[in-house]
Amino acid sequence: MKNKIENNGIGRWVKKALCGGAVLGLAMTMGAGSALAAGQGSSNGAQSHGFGSMTPFSRVAKVPVVKVQGQIDYKATYAKARAASLAIATYVARTVEADLLGSDVIKGIDWKLGGTSKHCLDNPTLDGACSDEEISHNVLMIPSPDPIDPTDATYVETGVVTKPNTKKGNVIEFCNKKYASMAMGVAPIIADKPVVNGWAHAPALPCEVSVWNDDQHIYVDMLDPSAIFTLFFSDVLFSADMQDPAFAEALYAMPPQVKGEIVAIIHAALADFDPDTKAMDQKIGPVYNSIEDIIKVVDASPLDSPYLHMIYTKQDGGSFTQTESKTVAQTIINTMSKHGDPDAGTHPTVINEDGDTLDSILSPKSSWRSARIAPITIPGKNHIIEACSPKYAKMAMGTGLHHVNALPCEITVKLLSNGSLAISYLDPAFMLGAMFADVEMTDDERAEFFAITGKINTDLQNIVKVALDVNLGIALNAPTRKVINMLP
Image (cartoon, rainbow, N blue to C red; front, side, top):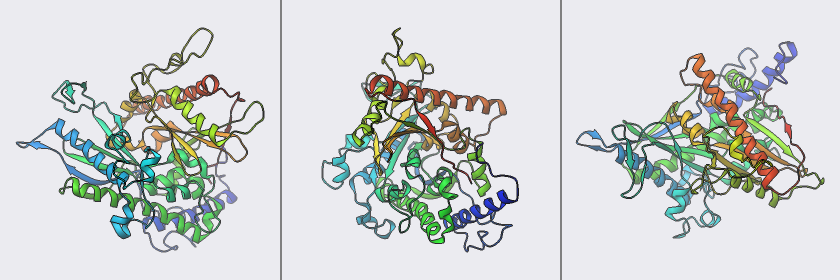
């Protein structure tokens, strides 16, 4: 990898100095106590003490399944899991949480349901502003290879429509302007100090919560903000700003605050949904026990980063506008096709004089589509596209539905200050390595599993290339890769 920590005296000193600042912050997050406990002032302990342990996923609640005469009713339980997800989403969309939850949520900072319209976002308490249909549409459903009812070959969801017996996980996306602004470098952490490379982290947002069931329980899981921040913001973790104790303290106060607010919202929503809901705080997924674990998983990824950033410029030398930035994001969605449309997953765009279509260069039966009809725009005017392939989603979910919050695949579009345009991808190889490392596999199985990451990467880049070359209508130069060093 580029910029590896050199195995010499200077390299070791740099690593200890940077890790000292990082571990100070991590100790604050994990409740490890004093700076001395975190290794500050002790060069021998700075890299291994005070970290605690963290996982990318956290289980925050369990809801009882539906039973009839002591036996689980699979269909009713699956429907209840969906209803629980809608109860949480409705609470987020239609309430100002700080007005109801007191000190559990910072006053004046309202959480939003990702993907909802501006009318809904601006008028959460207005009757009819956030319709049931809009809320339901914005709770994503990720397919798995598991059956809803293992005793039934098909599942009749209504009296009219028969659907395949495919169990799906429900994903709710929580958005918060204050915390997203800080994460994206739009708002400072302290005084005039924002996080470094703010825009480059956009594919790691928004915050995700999932609801799914097995034979025993309905589970409510979330991406753990402390672990996600550590894994996906490692360039901030190892930045010079971390040597400022005030910056480190303020930075690492944010993830547990975010988690606490989301958990409070979930518990409030489910208290009315099912009074037998059990609150939990359980770590799920791969465990990270030290700062070296974070360095190792980033270093092991092909790009030494969770992200791939490609920079585009116009052939005429002009600058992109904010309007064009959003148009690019929408063009990618339109080219990919939109979930819910009758032709979702088919791509008729002709790519050459022979009449070949986009589907001819995508992996067989990938059936890519955008999970949403429009991008989610987060602070800094970062436009998020959520790409989903039922084929690859089912393969990923075959490792366990507790991984569902790691999907869908995200692409972001961002206008940079120099007038160029950045299109960023969450690297699927990093995602599988960092988020699915708890899956027990043989070496051959792991190699086969990781082979799909190259196909996903190629598919997504081909979709973007066709969207820009064929459908956009703006002449562009060939893109260049922007490398952001994520490691010390």
